[in-house]
Image (cartoon, rainbow, N blue to C red; front, top):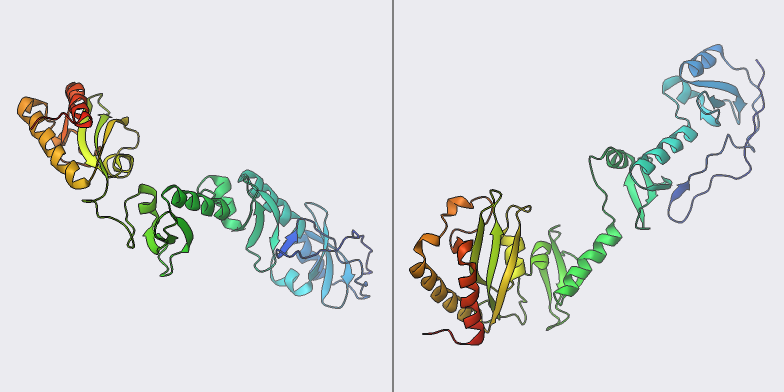
Length: 329
């Protein structure tokens, strides 16, 4: 059987600086000379059974030109590969990767030259990502999400800046939950801090920080609405009421809650003394308004200091007396 010619595009496959094989697929290399040898019937039978047709022999006695039955693309393959495995049409493979990327909300830039299991993609944010093909298929199926490392690093840096710190880099001890920060608005000391603590502001500087007893604090009033519709009011103190509410008290993220009032106190020591006096007044005047902790178990992470919402105005009035400095002895 004689060989048959096949055409190829003139642009060769190239590798970019990012180690990406671009999304262009060439036919068998046009510079490869035909090889004047017979095509064994068993080769044609194997090609037909696996979705291809042999259009000729090429380069040397080890290579064939295969045409894909699905897309018509012609590419170079080894005879051994044809006979011992299932050949993969590169054009069909690129088409599948492009389709998976589109379904996942990405743009497929090209395959990674370092690993056949990876490709490079353009994320919706505009940044380039390297991801495993299987991960992209899971994203397309909705079973996993996307996180851009560049955007995530910017988010972490912004979180630190909001607290007066600068993100230096990953934890030098290798703990994925920690980062290395520098106290930019303080003494400049570097410190390992859990990212969750940076987000919630529940940490102190080992170089210049004050303990909670000496640091400024706040008295606060918070309102919670349980799923059954019952409204509650909480009186308490915290160095950071927003962090106290979002990262400690609120278990049920769908439960409506808000901070009604906050009164600055010079120190945590002073705040806790005043808070105890206010609770003593409320319990003495309205013992039946104290809510049983069983009513909010699993919704609010606290065991006491919560009252029926009917006391809201009185709680706010007490805080007003504290703010004005007229709290009686």
